[in-house]
Length: 211
Image (cartoon, rainbow, N blue to C red; front, side, top):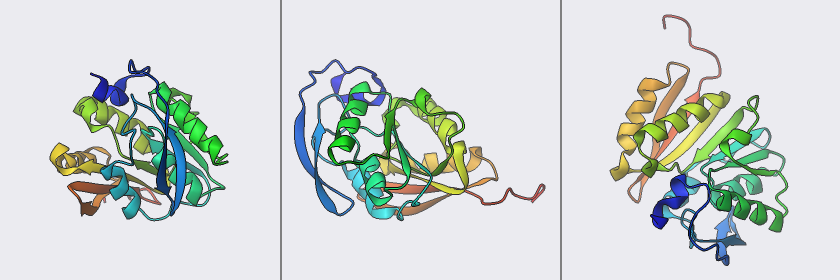
């Protein structure tokens, strides 16, 4: 189904018809390139807008991750706000990664690395993670993805996830809290337009054994 290709298809079957779009990124209008077969090619989707309005500014340095980057609104925002950081835009969709690379080059955002999940070096840890995760891949695949990336947060780092309430935001909140263990704390920090924003914080120091 073409509508859902962006969630789990490496090479979309839809025609690669590029178009330009001007969107607000970090308080300024940027013209970007989009195409069918990637997530929300005609605008910044509502969930991402809620996320970007809610999260605090990212760290100025270090490695920052946009998990499920699509054509790049979150990655471009991270790189615009933190030009000295290394920003990873990760997606399985090759077309999305090509679009992000082109959009980064167009605006001289040289800190952006648009890569597939297996192309992030294993020793990289993240000062923050921002994500509008692909909920429709299904619960098992979503959980596997989050358990792969959230434990790569640096100590003191926070992952911010935006999830539609009627697509399981509250159950995901409970699952994160019950699965990640005492090194992490999960909280809902915002609720707007039918979306929840969850913050998963990794404690700066490990919890005391038995605490």
